[in-house]
Image (tube, rainbow, N blue to C red; front, side):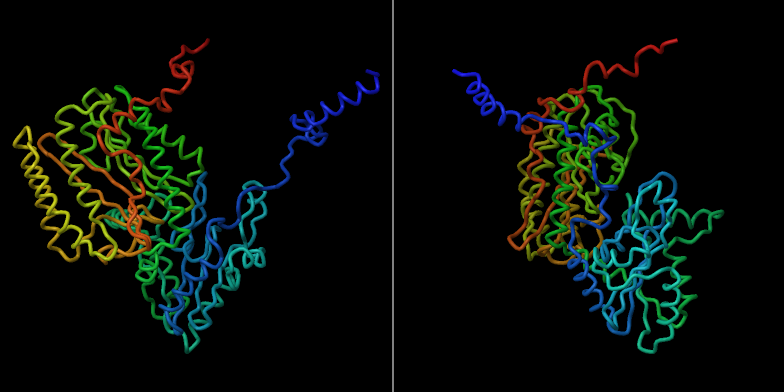
Amino acid sequence: MTQAFKTCFLILILFPIALLMPHTSSAQEGSWHTSEKIEDRPLFTNYFSPQEFEERRDQVYDEIGSTGIAIIQGAAMPKGYTAFRQNNEFFYLSGIESPDAYLILDGSTREATVYLLHRRERREYGEGKLLSFEDADLVKELSGIDHVGSYEMLMEDLRTYNERDEIGVAFTPQTPYEGYRMTRSMAVRHQQDVTENPLDTRPARYQNFITELKSVAPDLAIRNLDPILDELRRIKSEAEIDLIKRSTDLQAAAIAEAIRSTEVGVKAYELEAAAKYIYQKYNMQDEAYYALIHVGPDAYMNHYHNSIRSAKSGDMLLMDYGGHYHYYSSDLARMWPANGKFNPVQTELYTFYLQIYEAILYNIESGLTPQQVMRKAVQEMDVILEETTFSDSLYEQAARDFVDGYRRQSENPEMRLGHGVGMSVHDVGDYTKPIEAGMVFVIEPQFRVPEERIYIRLEDMIIVTEEGVEIFSDYLPRDIESIENMMQEEGLLQKFPAEMQGLLDMPKQD
């Protein structure tokens, strides 16, 4: 074989291999970084089209009529080192995530205007770009909003609306705004706490806004926008349901890791750490509420948090800890034994509860009212109650009281099966209405034996589509055998490197 032939042969063999091997370009070798984008943070949501926001605004126009406007105040600039999160009400109608923004929907023209701050160049230099008034063309392109104004234009437009004979009503939210870890019910509770403090007389932000609105446009009648938005938000779109499902998947994964990671001696905050890893790893936007991870008797106070109790053999644990995935939440709860095995009392009461729980869960049907569902479920509950043998009369009485409570509920035409879930973990909307496609809600029966501070609660995500009712979180184990099997698997806390476990216990060096 000649030398030339050998050389050609080697080139033919080695060249394709070289192409497949990782290589470093001259640009990589001669630069500080190779990422080309100056920023890689979306300026507008990637999860909803401008058309979907436009459809929502169209429904508002239909409700406020040609003589009305709707005006919504966005979330304020965050304090301190806190990431900005838009108010739910504002995001739902615009998708705009700039702080201190305002949105006006004009019922007479059926056009929307968003009012933004002027660019703050010094702040953008250090914190990155925010959509501002100077980005008007970009804002319209990204969002589909018809017009973009400044603060100066906002005040001028409000005075003009006040003078226009054909405009007589301004609709605006009249309850505290929802946002980061803030449902409406919690926001109302917070405001009540403030009003009870004699040395804190500040009005809520929404109240101050209404006062200022009346000052600028005194001839406009102020009406409540909340009922209109609440009804729209009760029925979710396909895009909304996709985000809710993703949020549910992440919460289910977090709870599963907590179950796997549990062993005698574990603390609630360690399980919270495992859950937070899942949330951070998969880009959960923020926590929907503080972690409800209960060890033993802590569960009896169903919103107890920040416990430092260590789990003992014979304790039950409860976890209810969800997040927001791009403004949409989930709400799940599971219980399991600290030592990996249900003892006889735990088996007895948990089995009874699970049967009652599933009697409600699997009787939910599209088209039925909550009252009709509960009446069917109570019939099954009575059979379960009579077929269950209790080891203690105390437990039997608690079980009968539990079922009787649902029996009384089934006679109430205004009853709800649970609470809605969507942009808020306790979402707005009337859930006493018949079950229909687009609704997303949970059930969360709460069984108590006060004398022994026993508390049992499960929670699952129920999504109603045109095809029927889907228990979307059914795959997260509820039955005893599946829970015990999952607890035999290695969890995140066990995978943590052994040399890191004692890192904080190492003696300090002089």
